[in-house]
Length: 255
Image 1 (cartoon, helix red, strand yellow):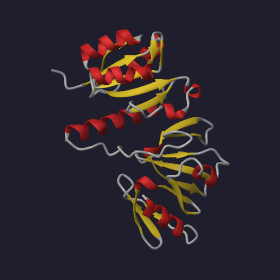
Image 2 (cartoon, helix red, strand yellow):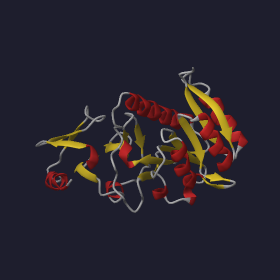
Image 3 (tube, one colour):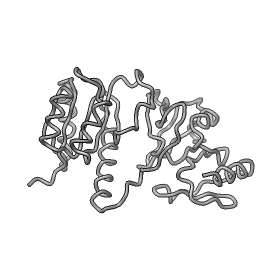
Image 4 (cartoon, rainbow, N blue to C red):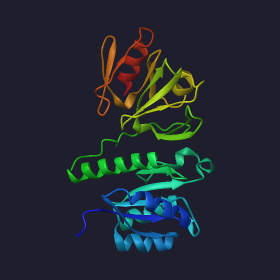
């Protein structure tokens, strides 16, 4: 019996299925075992194959993929579901992070897909070891939902889950704010993005220093001049500016 991850793709665009299948073929531990173009045929396929990893398009000819997730979970509750769409702007960002495990934008970016695969592998490893997912932190409900969408330094739209953001830091070299993510990567935001812009996005973002903003869900310990974070940011020590210390401690006590 194959130990490879069984992958199913449900998308009404044949070219998208072919492209995604081609990219996934480069991963030796993954195997695309089937594809479908409608909710109905996808339901039958999921029931038959019981995929480990399911890529599900939002807009399908016979229904909405977001509504279809609950049916998938009833058939196969262990499936790791990745929603993807080329029409993100048609949906309020609060649409996401309900039942799905992850999401992507189309056309598929190989670097972004690689991050999704890494998150899936991490999820599977923790599930197999009987541990809870590290990313089960429940982000705050904000006017922008549970994702952080922003324009990057290269003028691209980037969507990040709040629970994947540890902190923000200001790069003096580039003169931009950077987002620190759970996979230890940094995303540079568009020049002109201010600390106030970031702070207004979610009440969980609190400034610790003129050059640092922390996601309170990861805040572990507040010292006199620095603060420490939970894993996977436990190697990072953020400075605390004199101006921001009192508010930071007050917000920490409210958690």
